[in-house]
Image (cartoon, rainbow, N blue to C red; front, side, top):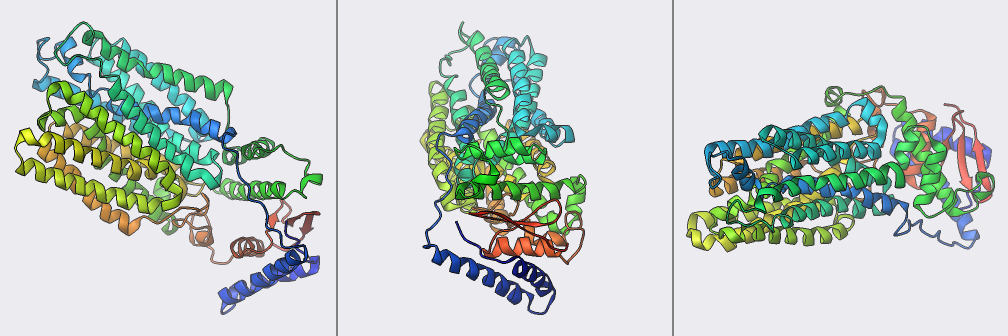
Length: 591
């Protein structure tokens, strides 16, 4: 642990000097110079003490955070499962209810319209669920209880589907499941990101995309026992099992989060003012037991965790002092406008590429490409297997390659895959299109998964400050699901060629937008992203009051944090704490 060696009087002088230096000509030079003095003093004392490097603070591999993450990805699995669980059984549902006035025909206009509406209404429900997440009472519940609420909707959606007696019950089933989907699609990645230690947040957050892919694969696998020959005895009831399966998984997650593993993130606990619980959770995350702070500060790990906790407390206090901000107000604030608009763009682009339409109608598209009827579901399963395989690899790449790189590379491969498919449909005869359709559709799906699928909501959860994170993610969710509703409904009436043209064109345009507007967030603190850096908060009308001059307290804390000097923290009485091996030194300063 560093020995700071700063006298009380010197600290006061440097604090005030930093304040006046900021307002003087050449302020960047003088601020940097003063911070280097502080850092040199620390380094000098460190050298005298032997110059031993501090051991890194690492969370255990199977600690409480990892357990919470694996409980959270049940929602990710349900997300993927609901996207295409009707892909293999929709025709049998149409035959069962005789929408075409026959138990042997399912390709009439009424069947197409009813099937399209049942598929698409899931996303209207999801838009309602996403809107619900942004309400103040839901924000106060926190991400864990939001997932518990989503499980209730998933459960009853599965019940309505399993015992459906007609199209009204099926629509209600999909609507309820959609509301659960809209809540969990936002809350799950936020919960995973917040509960994960910063050093492995990307790796844990990528599991959201991995388990979405696993859910997609499971939805296709459960359709394999169905006989493509027609409405057999098994086909007459198997679709009910497919629609009812989410009841079990939703029930498991409900019980785990409610009773067995009621773990809230440290960020949420601090925001709620539950500091003792937050401290306990933070220590448990790193496999430690909370110490008596009067005797435990000599331990470097204890000091680091206390610094983390105090940083979160300062951020939460700033957020609490800010009145609730609406999305309309945020768009009008120059500091927040760019992140809001880019978030809306990325959320809509993720769905307008047509990924959910492709997964929902993959059997239909493969059939138009010439794949035999008895191999349609198998082709969809193999495509999902490739998707899961790439998802496993992507969990290792998020923290090494970065968010922007994966988004751009994924968007590029998507565009090339659909452009190639357009060429195949126009040039090759239908009997030769099947294999190429499988290859290029699989390439499109896996590139979407490791790019837009794995990164979009991780990136969105990282770019918004605490004051608007809930409202912004809720608005992004509404835009995402409305975009999905329209693309899935429209794609139901498009043939193979037009579908590929549409998906490829959107992918190409979105790729250009990402290259222009998406910034890298790898390694950034969630409260200090490059889209909304804390150093520029004073320019915000809503967050910084429009003031361009920081107080001495703000200058000292920010300068020390940014320039690597002795880290200070602010108490309620505006005094500063420096945590050293021999205890906590307190310095008073004028605010």
